[in-house]
Length: 395
Image (cartoon, rainbow, N blue to C red):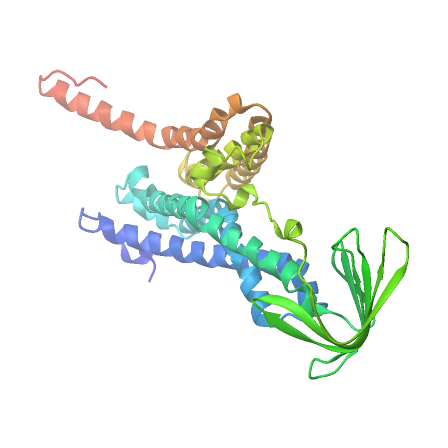
């Protein structure tokens, strides 16, 4: 049963929490469904970039899902302010279409009471965004980059393809003619240039892969090792019955520098001078302020949706201009946010604009929506006091 059918008399203060729960439940359910659906859609599109790891390198589906699922928190942090606006706009617009807002207003509820569930929903989005940006997303993204680096570099040696020259690093290339079901390799050739003074070519009839101290190695049988002596120019050939080769990349290529998205808030604001150059400190500071300011856009976007539905005069036939204006305002604010971040990255003195762009629209909408009600209450109180002969309070 909808509220429009059940509310037949002016609600008391005891009924107001029930009305809040009625609207807030719709907002939170719609927010969870919309955010989850969009995050899943973005995850499907972005995970296509890593399908090659499954198709070409033979990774299991479990590893693929575990790797790409680490990106989901970053998707949620980006789309949550937008979905908050969409949900507030949709739910309150539906309440207006079903005449439930009309019943609430006729029952004497002020705009603040009607908007209170939307404000609570916006507050929950702000807190969740802060939690994601400050703590969850950096840790998840760091785990993702570390996992991806391990797959592409340290485990790449296990993903040798038959009949293909596979570059394991810039100094090592491996060719395998065929591979049996038990993992035995046939027709192996290894170009090893990890020692620039003594590059070598290794040929073997067969071999097998092993894991030694979490490092990929291959045991070769019945082969030869060919090296060119740089001093004499002679070709040295060493035949062997069994030989073990380490297929890990050189230590210098195993070093991975962390991205700004992986660093914590403290590391962004106080970067290590040995890891971050002076010219990149501004970009790191912008990333830190973006994490702190972007959650407050959820409140501003929700206020824009509330003003578009609750502000102005009531129309029985609806008004398509208000939702369209609200949508275009949010789009313009998103574009303005990107522009301000770009300018702040070039000129750190413009970073306060990021706070203004995130908070000012919500404050303006709050004043536009709630100030007329406050003035009416003040005038009513002043009139009653004047009628009773008491001085009117100052605004």
